[in-house]
Image 1 (cartoon, rainbow, N blue to C red):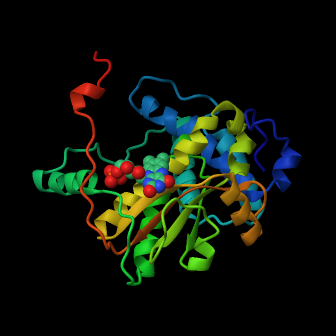
Image 2: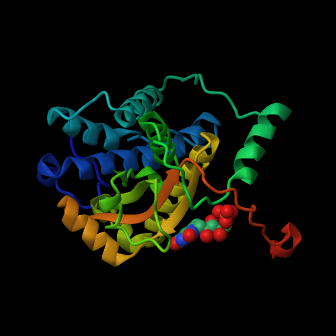
Image 3: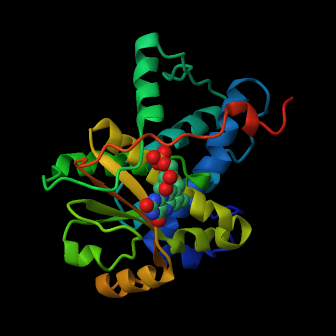
Length: 280
Ligand SMILES: Cc1cc2nc3c(=O)[nH]c(=O)nc-3n(C[C@H](O)[C@H](O)[C@H](O)COP(=O)(O)O)c2cc1C
């Protein structure tokens, strides 16, 4: 067994052996991010020495995860295992060669697609009575999951509502007909475990926003129309009660997607020069 290092957010070893797996997973994510991922590329660039305990905190946490019989083949855990492997090699004085490549500019053709996606998306608020295939919803959810998230904590959860009765639990300022509603939810346990609800509370909202935006872009690429909608505490309470969710599980915002039944004029923005308020 690996001995407990410092820097696991005040949890004792005993607490970590019985803490909610969601919390343990959060610690594994965050520690991998802050104690390996953000350092390793500086090390590889020769700008930093390998810390003596490089990767040991994550090793300790992952060992607990493994000994509790929690899944080792989940994609996020495999990502952790890979970083641990690299950290171990560097710690023992070895060298690593990454398979990854530097990003390259898109080709002109690829850029046209990106521009079509980013500048062609618009909010659509009426939908045709045509079923949205489950496969499309899964693609949209995956896009939401792949959005950036503060400190890679992994708090985002989704609720998909197709039933109009259930959709009425969610306050929206527009009538929802024929759309699929996706609630962007968060497991607050994740933030609380790290004290992020106090230290970086803004990340909670940003995480949800990034997920919603990614999903709307994927919906647009699939030929669906979507809109971002706001809801507040009343909806959070109703959804929590209806699904019997723990108090730490909060719905943050929602999007509705469906086959478009309107073609709105694309909204415009102020000119680019007007919005640049500082320039280096
Ligand atoms: C944080 C946020 C909250 C929004 N809330 C609502 C809403 O409650 N109802 C609505 O009809 N649209 C809502 N929208 C969509 C905006 O009205 C829309 O994005 C904006 O008018 C720009 O139009 P476009 O999306 O077509 O570019 C929201 C968008 C964001 C980012």
